[in-house]
Image 1: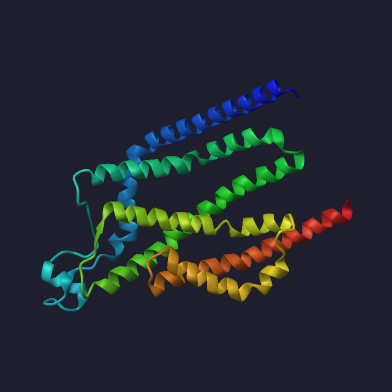
Image 2: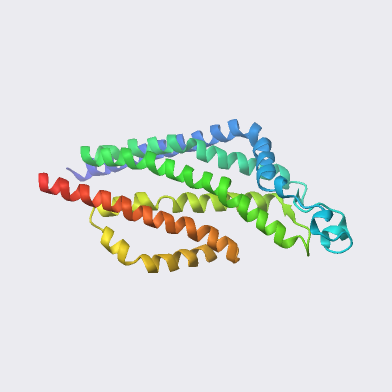
Amino acid sequence: MTENSKKQSLIEHLEELRMKVIICIIAVFICSAVSFPFSDDVINKMEDDLIGKYMITPEDTGNNTTGACACSGIESGNVIVTSPMEGVITLFKVSIFMGIYLSIPIIIYQLFSFVSPALYRREKKIFILILPVSYILFTGGALFTYIVLLPIMMQFFMAFSAPVAVSLFKLSELISFVVMMMLIMGIIFQWPLITAIFSKFGILSPKLLSEKRRYAIVICFILGAFMTDPTFITQIMLAIPMIILYEIGILTASLSHTKRYRERSEA
């Protein structure tokens, strides 16, 4: 291949990559625009699920004359905005988050179509399997966070603060907290897939994962403390799912490891 043909090939690949990126950006923009009319409904639903059910009135503190809730007469658990543009900006942020999530299948397809010409048939099969499974695992982690973790955490925080303070949640910070927690758990839920891939390529082994279990448990609690507010309840609520996922990761690694050696013996 001549120098000119190499340059032409590189330019063609960069042009194709540029088109793929443009398509992904357009997909995010369209999905965000479609999602925008529903942003307020999503926020209201989130407020009701995570805060509305656990709102604390002055009477709930057990003392009608003392305590921050009783003194102010304000229900603990109200969501507020502290600047004129905060509500509007938050609506746009929520629609963008929804748009990115909804456009992930399109982004995955564009990524696969770009790299597939350089892959062998076997690698394409693995790629086709990994991407949808990763998307499903991420969705599962986000749903687990929203349905299980966040309600327990919000209830604990509001109940713990009620005797001494009124819980007033800033809208933008509440949305950022919820999105951050869902993103963290969505990434953590990728662990079984990661162990299966690494085991298939001989990078990890089920035996090694089993031997390092005690260290993994300690690391899970440390990560649980660093990734959220440094309170014991959030540390436990994040560490327990990570430990369970670690055990599932050992199982998926074992299955992948067994399949790898079976394919070697048949070859």
